[in-house]
Structure formats: structure tokens, C-alpha cells
Length: 259
Image 1 (cartoon, helix red, strand yellow):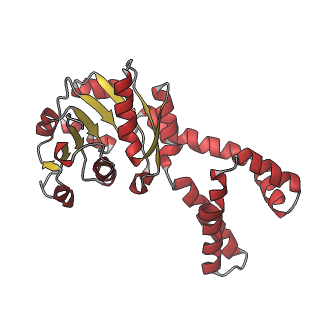
Image 2 (cartoon, rainbow, N blue to C red):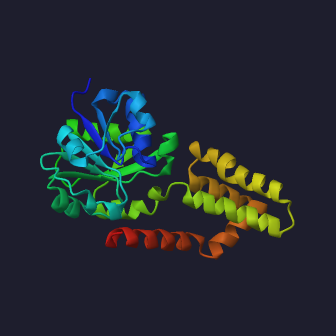
Image 3 (tube, rainbow, N blue to C red):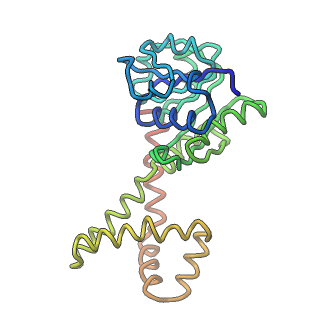
């Protein structure tokens, strides 16, 4: 049983709240050792046994590990001193150096979860510039894996890039589904059928990728030279992969220069 305390500033927001629930549901930490910031001091999560605190510095002082789950533009206004604490930041575009300068913390982990934390299917990359013991790595990895899967990446720049890739969560699939539905309607397909067909492609048929390598599937479909091959070839000829690369790079540049 863990004896340390975890505090989450932003712990009753959508991301912090989902993480808090997962930490308790999976048994990663006992509810009475979880501290959540909340301005009003009242929230349904209090019924779980977690402790709600309206004072951010009081929360920092009472915890061993501090998780920052606030919008980047709200960070500096927190005005907290986290000297001697392990800090895990879930903020996009705020470098570890800045976090250290503002909070006084020396052990800083940057992680980037996505909206799939709500269904505990997030892929969460994380980075820490310090040499970590095996127990430290296990703690961070286990904490983040409560909401899906997690992997340590070799550089902070990788976190900024992945903020625009995995950090976007369902954004790219949602855009694809919307585009497919709109194009089907434009081609004369009734809207309800168009939406069902697009959903079937993005949500249902894509489940095949759980047991098939994507490139192998593409190669086999292109080799068949049928309807699917014609559609795929059109996208490839139009530079689809390059467009995706440009989109991710655009998002990564926002993260790199700070938000």
C-alpha cells in the first residue's frame, strides 16, 4: 500500500478528475491519500473519500507528488512553491525549465494525456530529464497507465511533437468521420445512412488494426486493385501522408513556442 500522498491541481476538471477517479478505481492509491484542488471546496469526487482543498499551496505542502492539470495560461497565476516535490505536468507547451523556475521543483515530469482518459484508453507519453531509479520509473509509469498506456520518450521535444499527435486524442478520427459523412451526403446518400457508414469505417472496421499491421493491410488492399485500392491510391497520390505530417507539425510548433 502506498504511503505517499498525491495532489492534483485541477483535480476536479475533466482531465484531472478522470485521472483522480482512475487512480482510486485501480487501487493505485487510497482515496484518503489523494488531494484535489477545488475553489469551492465542494465536488462529487469528495464522496469517494478524496480530500478537496481550496488552497493550492496548502495542497502542495501536504502532498509528495504534485500533478498539474490546468490550462497552460493559468499556470503562472497558481503562484505555488513546490520545492522538494515530484511534479508531473499535464500541460501542453510549458517546458520543464519554466515549471522549475516558477515552482522551485527540481524533479519534473512532462506528460501528455488525451481525451481518451475518460474511457481509460489514452496513450500518454512522458519525459523526465533526470536519471530515475527503477522505483521512480515504475511509479510514474503506473500512475499514467491508470488511464490507458504510457511510454517514456527520450526528449522534451518529443513531448511537444506528440502533443499534436497522440495528444489530439479523437480529433483526427472525428475529422475523418465528419469528412466521410459530408462527402456521402454530397453524393446523394441520406444523412442518417451517411453518418452510420462513416461511423462504421472509423469506429468498427478500424478494430481490425488491433490484430493487423496497418502497412500490411494497406499493401494487401492496394495489391487487390479493387474499389478500396482506387480510393487509397487517390489519397496517396494527393499527398495524404504529407498533409498529415504538416498538420502534426503545425500543432507541434504551437507546443514548442508555448501556449
